[in-house]
Length: 146
Image (cartoon, rainbow, N blue to C red; front, side, top):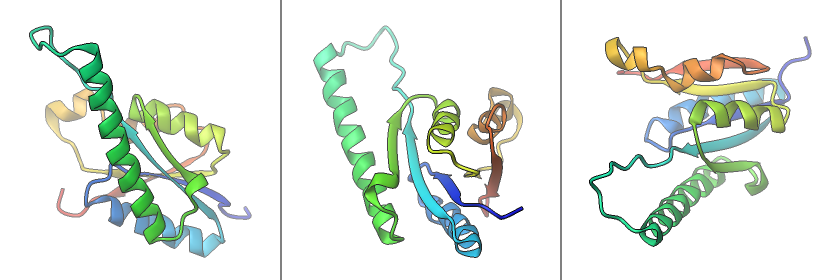
């Protein structure tokens, strides 16, 4: 095995993201790999009782996407990841991570795990969802204290 050359790091932009990114950076340094960084924003679920117009939704999504893009740019810049290697998308996190990994030909995907238990585990976690169908190695980083 020649090692990893293209590592995709998926983060949720929480304070824990730095920990996950640090683990991925250690691996990238060890193998001389390129890092790509991604964040997936899940669509907002709205009940029928809410009275929000379509224009309000568009404004809300645009603002949330702008904020997450800025956070991703800041995080990427803090560790020297080129802007063209940053991916900020809207959708189902597990599916979008798998799709991006395939699209960029990643040979390793790194995600964090908050250690869900009970009912949360039954609903599924992003890391579990990524593992079903990802076409490369997957490193699930356990977040301390969770």
